[in-house]
Length: 300
Figure 1: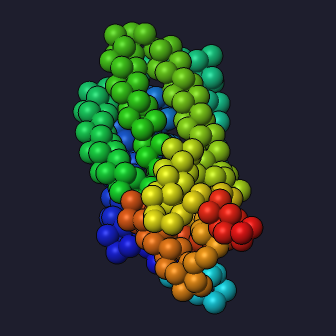
Figure 2: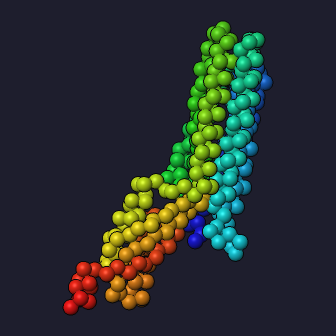
Figure 3: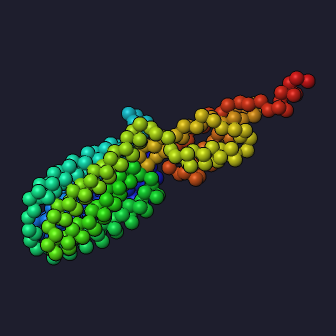
């Protein structure tokens, strides 16, 4: 099963938009940090540089994940997205540690800030660009369920908080409270590190074939049981690979059905699940089940 074309187009747009945003923000933050010397701005610059590296990795990973299944990868290449998520988690965690170390040094040895007006303007621009990107990513995640884009959105959400914190720190530091700049930088590093852990946990869940949420599995079970002649369903197993969901289940069918009829019911079960979850690849196994009427007829 290949990724739907609409999903593929959205994933390419989302990765391109994230990379362009990260590069733009890194450039303007570098200028603002050079003029002001703010630790908070350095935190923002470091984060944006690593965002750019992570988004570039994401772009390549999503491009690879969208490749159709081949003889060597019969389930597709979707887990490349989860690998990219782990890579992003490492990038972001390292950036958090570096920023925290610099913040502690500046807290112990406060330095006066330079031009903060440019920094304030840059942070306002950063907040607007990041918010616009998050709105688009939210739409892409809702449509595709992509692990890689969800990982991107997690750290860009932390960026939004980070940028707002930097803005407050610059305004307060401009009033003479220099220690707040370093303190905010350390606090921001903690937020970044927490985001890295969240991204890493989600990527690991995909790589370890964690089940879909009970909300989805219970709905799939219910959909299977709505198909005529389906007497029950069991052994439902699910996993994710990129934007695709793989579903396996057994359905119980009346024993008197012919092989052709049983096959038709299995096809109908798969179609019912795909109608609601189009990203699903569904494999259905039929189990014969004798009804009470069958048993009574055989005993007479």
